[in-house]
Image (cartoon, rainbow, N blue to C red; front, side, top):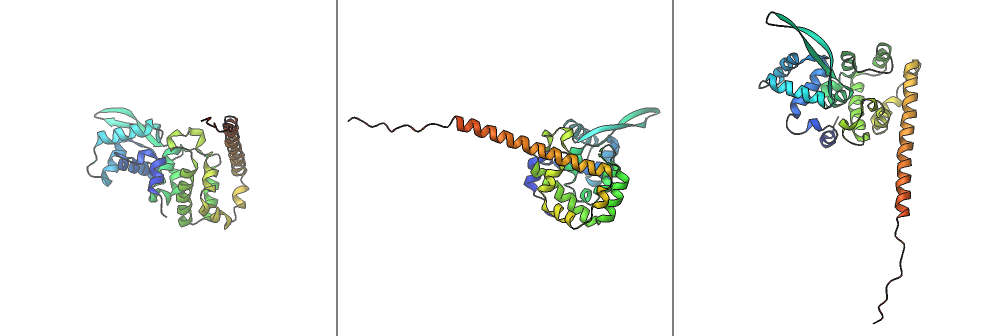
Length: 245
């Protein structure tokens, strides 16, 4: 599926310019492997890019953490010389997950990625929901849905992804679906009644619809207020000045 590179770079700024390729690969590795310490990220990235060095990877990870794409999700015991030490392990945030979907290998493995990254909390139980989804959709369909969702999501968010607060990531899920007709078409072709029989799933979609409705009402209210201010300042017509000469 074609993904508009300009759209991606305009909404995910870490994927443009210097360091963008390392950023993309680090997010891809984290998505597919789960949380890792910096040294393990370095080793896996070096397989893909021979000229990679550890200080560069360390700086990239720190920058991704600072900008909200990765976070410390735990500690791992390592041996330094003869001494044991604790090293932080880094995993994706929801922002990093969305950015990671620009990788075809991540999109093709979207459910596996969510299983590998339990720090990405979902408002419903993973195992029964994922089992039903795997029964309903093929891997090819899930890949199409993931990439369509990415495009719809980037179209739906008002600014680049770094402006979103953590609690807003799931809020934009339904707007993303409305911006991606391929997803609606796939959903219409499938019987999703089994999914909606899971109370947490039903409540999630019900709440999402309510949140989306409130978001639209707030936007409409802002537009109406802007129009009121505009009309209040509308200049009045004046009679043309006629010269007495």
